[in-house]
Image (tube, rainbow, N blue to C red; front, side):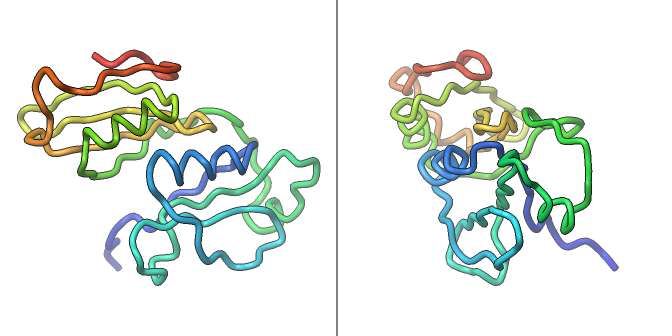
Length: 160
C-alpha cells in the first residue's frame, strides 16, 4: 500500500484562538468542518475541497481536563512549545510580496533563504505554539531592491 501524500498535521495548542488567528490571518487557512470530538479543536482548510479533511488540525489542550484528548489520541508527554523531534513543516506557496506584507502587518518575524539550485525562495516563520513553518516560493517572484523587509517581533531571527 503506497503512501499518496501528507494528509494533515496536528498541533496540541495551548492557545487555540491565538493559533486560529495565526493560521487564518497569516497563512490564509479557513476553519471549516470538524467532527464533534470530546475535546476542543479546529480543522483548517486551504482550498474548497472538504474531502481532504483539512491540512492543519489544532487540538486545544491545557484547559485543565484533557481527558477527551487522552482517550482519543493517547496519553503522551507533551512539549507545549516547538516541534520536538520534528524540525519543520513546509508548504509550496505563491505571492511572496503579499505574504511579506502580511508578516509585517501581523507582526510575524521571518527568515529568508534562497536555494538557487531548486529555484526557491524560502520564508521560515513560527506559529504561536513554536512550530516552524517553511514557505517555498518560486525564486522568479522575488523582487530586487523593492522587497518588503522584516519588521516587528523577529520570533525566529531576522530576515537575511
